[in-house]
Image (cartoon, rainbow, N blue to C red; front, top):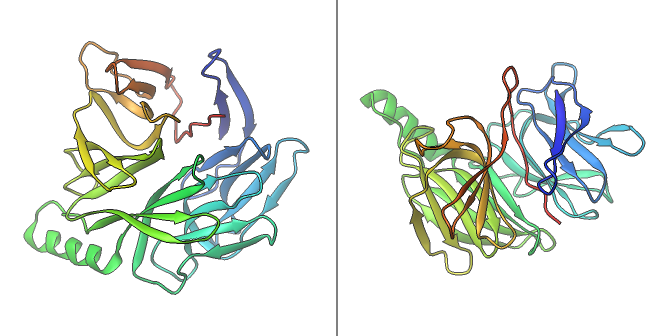
Length: 286
């Protein structure tokens, strides 16, 4: 599995490294301050673990031993933690963990809470805070059973966005959405960009901006098609996303795009090539 960088300034695509594709989901992120790649890989067919690859000396280090699956890896600062959304062996729910580089330990937040499921997350480098999308596993199961019994589309459990300070670990609720799924989230410029739906992993897909300080939500009518890979710019005035366009005048191709909230302009950044597939991407800014 190839890992590439694309420079927005000069349009150059650079092959960084190849990572073994052995995990349940191919997940790789880059941490430029550390010159490292963080990725998930299977160990002995017993579960996916967290690994780090040093781009300077080519050394690989296994950072975890007791995980089953990893859904998200989010690097922060050079000295700060690596945020991991994962399922521990023997557990059911996705939990939030911080890999602390000084102690080389993966420390779970609220480890004894076996009901709260962390679906996705976003990191704001300006505030050094992380935003978690969470819901109750019990409520989710009840909604699934109801959908099966009534043969209807599944209505999501209540989804909540929780802010966590990466230093103090203090938490604060930002917004709670009843009967709505939050599929994607990005935090930047004092606001959250949320991708939501009234059904689990089904259309219609809606786009929203939420003020982080007040929790005020504003729905947006955007000519884009995106679900999980969304990244606000530093000033919060634009959005990089993996997906496509709903505008018939624009090329209907999957790739990475930029949407300007102020002008409404949609810019093609990098299109998926024939015979290849973009599993995921991250927006890295200085």
